[in-house]
Image (tube, rainbow, N blue to C red; front, side):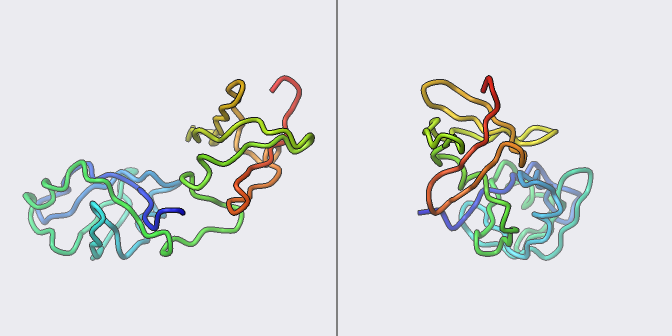
Length: 162
C-alpha cells in the first residue's frame, strides 16, 4: 500500500530573523510545493502561514516557528506532503509510485526487470531498469507505452540496442 505521506523537500536553513525557513524542493518545480497550506515535518502536520519561491527554494513561515532559533532547529528536517493534498494530471505520477513497478517490453510482453530508480536529470527523467542487465530508458513519450500503477507495470517501447 502506498504511503499517505510523500517526501517532498528538506529544510536547509533559516531565512531572516522572523522564523522563516528555506526549503529545498524535491518536486518538479518549487512552485508546486509552495502551493501547499499544510506540510509534515517528521510526520507532524504543520500549517503553512505563507510561502514563496526565492532563488530556487521555498521561503515558508510555519505555524509555531518564531525567531531564528526555532527555524534553525528544523534544519535538515525532511518535509512531506499528504498524498491526498496533491492533485496530479492523469499522465503524471509520483516517483515513489513508479519505483518497484515491473518493466515490460510493449512489443513482446517480455519482462525486462523492475524500475529500480528514476534519475531526475536536467533534460528529462531516466528510468533505471534492473533485470538480467541494467537498462536506462528516458522518461519521454516516445519510450513510454503505458503506465499502470494499479496493475504494477510500465510498458516501454524500446529501440534497437536497448
